[in-house]
Image (cartoon, rainbow, N blue to C red):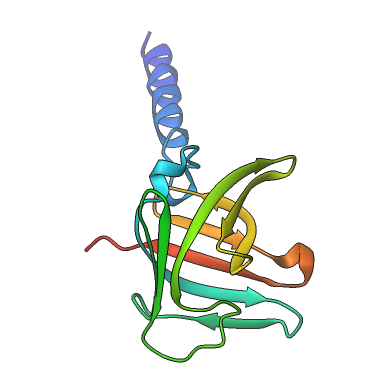
Length: 135
């Protein structure tokens, strides 16, 4: 009986540990979940193969229901311009795509709870990683 209890308890512990997940890795479906303020934290890839890390709020994207405001504290070579743009999220055969303005910042789009990415590597562009601003 003691052996059965130990086996049962071990199974419960393994099950509990395997059900834990990182919030940043949980994918979201609704475009409403992107509303709010996001900081660019990493830019990598492109033709030059660069990797650039950013401090929070160096470059921000503030999403409302139908517009995004892009701001930057410095003159970074980001591949997109600061300003206010319309945006949309579209479903494609390969996933979701984020379309900002008239081609200002477009790419394959993955949204998580605390992060999102815009991937332009299929067109020799960079991978942008953004983190949700909590303040």
